[in-house]
Image (tube, rainbow, N blue to C red; front, side, top):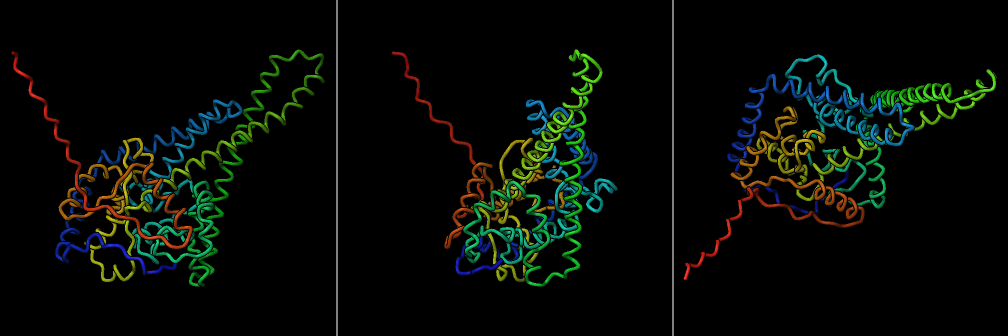
Length: 424
């Protein structure tokens, strides 16, 4: 990603001395150690319960879609399967692959053995996301998730004519996000620059093609075939009950003539439902990830700004390079607890179920050190993100105004009541 350094923005932690920055880092590290010392059965019950919930939702969705020729069953089954895919992708796959549950030493729920229902291989994702993105978060020219190599989402990026089309291909990216991420994981810039060996490119392509094969077989051949068989069997049963044939030949002719139609309809209905469920998952994932990284509140950094960065500086950069999304418990589960994107970037290997607990402590640190704590509603964050994508498709642009230091909302003072006049 080519950058230009003519635009500037204030460093939100420039007011901290080296000693204060290191103390900040120690306070953040202490939270991590305290949580890890407290991990136990309730955390284990949480993740096993989430995995069980996903399996139940997926089973329910697949079962409903066996009758997908029925419009109500199609709608309910598609929605249920879409939610199951979101849960598997966000709260389970993403977080397990971060190593958040490795402390359990469970051979199944472990970052070294887990694979997920998406186009990226676990190996490629852990390198491009866990290592590159979480190490070089929002460092221009280093963090390849900053615009995903195809979009200009920061004014410091040099404008190029291809960005004029980014509002259009952003819509395509939303619908097919898993495939966009899979290609992004290959590091296209490194391939074009000749910096990535072709044996590694071929290794990545084999991994993606294997994931593509599995998804095609599962969602676009296997389960649609089950629905086709169920539709055919159902029509045959109904045909026996309602037919009043004149003879055996007429019965066979009537039944066999209906077979292609019922099988075809069942197959196509489930195939379409599975495609829509995948799009539901992709659009949701795209929205949560973009809202956590690219709204107006987040800061980016030049490589010069992070030279000789200390651990305290790393924590401070993670803090201001992310933004939270406010919501209730169900929202946070469906977002993979990435509604707490700030806490996730501070502690990517901490079980996601603990982010809500530590958020007040993170806010308190932000208040004492005069640092921002970025948060907003989903609609607000999403509006800012898409406005930025549209605006920066064209030349120019400047960093948007940033929030000041975090200050907790104070309860409004109770209005003064007018004195009751004394009786005459």
